[in-house]
Image (cartoon, rainbow, N blue to C red; front, side, top):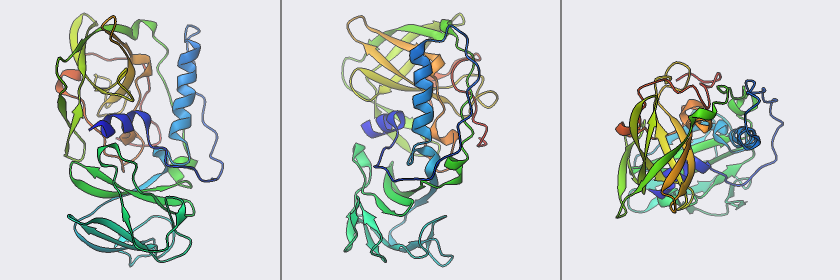
Length: 308
């Protein structure tokens, strides 16, 4: 799905609330003097995206739904119990044919920024669609579709994981790990079945692959569709996973140069998937070909504020 590749690369940005001031972000590890200005700017953008009001650090829940009717709120007697928000927020109805609807218990509840005056259908993020957002105060939720599994993703701009963000740590900039790879575009459009940590399979647009050599070995990385036709997104593993870096894999994005049939694989810009920061994400795993039989000491290190 286009959504899966694009959303994980660009991250969600569902409006904005005024929010508490977050704790200062720690400075990243000292870079070599050769680190380019655009690389340092990318680091700053990365930190800003993670710590945004509704970035990945604001997640406080993920609730999978079976067909039925559910009360939702922060009280102990609610069938979907939230970590924050009103004691009784409203009622969720889920039917595999009719979809998801929500009835609010309070006039303070907003649906896509407007007062929730009646029972309303909730759109999921299936196929890259913008999901319907239900919000009250600092808390919001929306429906996600992962391989046919429907869940409610809950965010809180006041989440401790956001307010206590410990910052990001990087390996020293390594110019030799910015590689220009040969790009092989597939002759016909294809989908690659990408597994996820929750056991689902996501058929994802797979425009081509990158051929390159690293540490004396030849590799072929499957590339997934990025934010547009000129960009790619990919997932890779290496032998730092579980030690210096997040256990499952890291992500990488870049540009496709179709005229010269090349792509830039800058491992200095390798970054952690959302699952490195929260247990409430549904991250994709790397294809078998996207594993490097060596340690890649470049890019983002393991996050100190969350265990694998």
